[in-house]
Length: 251
Image 1 (cartoon, helix red, strand yellow):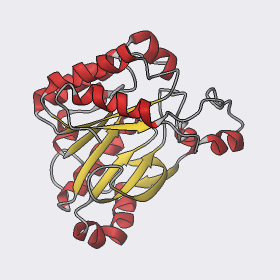
Image 2: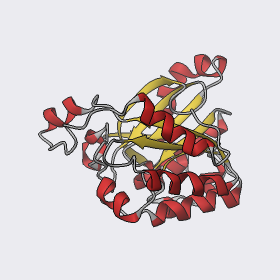
Image 3: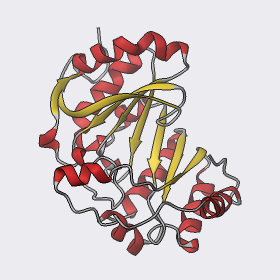
Image 4: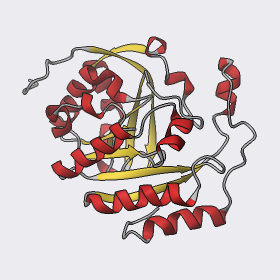
């Protein structure tokens, strides 16, 4: 029987999709559930179909656990776990909290993939059931962050400091988009901040790509960076070195 603050099987949430990934959404092979809804509109978003909550499929905690059960044996052998992503999973914190708790009761490693923009919605109880936070810090300079996401950087930084205070392991993700997020001072601001936290296990420097373009076309949504080319190997090397110079492990 489920214990703690969460009710078994409920409440229901709206889920966009789920997938199995290897080494991308946390350690090992993982079942990744993509929660519907996101307050940001990142110019390079790969999952625009997750922006609106109403586009999701209604599922209960029990429904998601049934899906996890199909892969659980393989996940355990492969040293993996369960990742809740989006969209922005903390849009539906009232669903994600019980879901993570139920997964932890199965002794499965859990990861929360978030921008941190709604970090204040993550209760202490929810975070107790998170083994790893995949934190997307999309830029440092406030004007650049707003240009890239439409939002404010401050909530993400507050959430990052809170995670550091809790000693919660964090992997930071940084997407390199030429002409948008690659400015030296912007990158160095994120790197310097990350280097002060003390709980950052690694930084994933991710090159922008155009794999999401077809989704925008199918949905009839304007893609603001359709003409941007992926970053060069030299640019990725430079950004990685900026993070390494702050004593961080970079991948």
